[in-house]
Length: 326
Image (cartoon, rainbow, N blue to C red; front, side, top):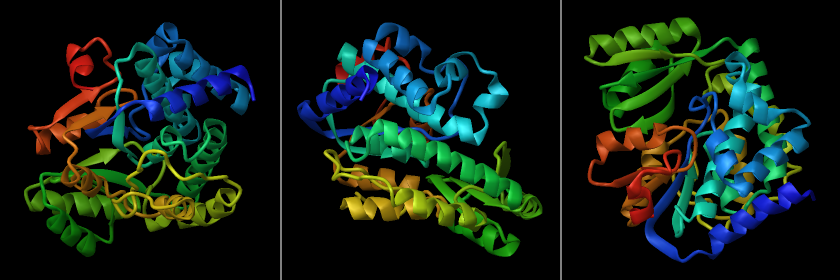
């Protein structure tokens, strides 16, 4: 184990030893939130964050840090690169927040959107960072490959209820793949199917917003990738989480290491029940959600449906509210 790898392990252990806040949850964004320069500020201000990037470079034997900081953007957005890049940048931002004590309470729950679930599992102590780096790079490769073999795309349907979107999918042949918010559901499928679904959504008073993606993720078009990924998962040494991880598939805490492997195997070709996961945590008493990762994608979605919650992004460490509420 390198010094860099031991440093990130220390950060994770430090998180687990903090006093628990039963009203706090930590969220990790997924692919799509990547941006040039992500994690750079954290790496400059925090030795632990810098170590996260050093570990990624060493484990993957590539300059992932340079790709995150400088691009080129078209390479950063490739699925095979975006997934390990988002994992690394999110953990670097978390490590910097722990170093600065911007985050000084242990959350009652952690959760991550799609790829972010892997970041959450590292933060919870279920999986080692180095193992997950290799895991998500292979996940990204398989998903990119499946997207080439089974041409697909995705669109966000905004302004319609889950029930109405379900009807649109039934009529068009599209599939629901991300339940993001009360009136935002992402659909996926073959391009012509998604086009039809967007037209039907517009007829019902909603909007269909096409997404720039390499495939119809979390749909049956990812079936071949999910099957190939199962053998990869069998080699993973999973531990019981030190912090409950609310999973994407069932929208409830993953109960055991065996369930974790099953969850990750299903997740690639199964809808992300993000809105239901948020409701689970709110019902359990969570009132403060902290997003650890580039940007503010997740807390922006939450603001629309839950204006009464305290919502914080660790990608903006200078915001005074972060220190006072976390």
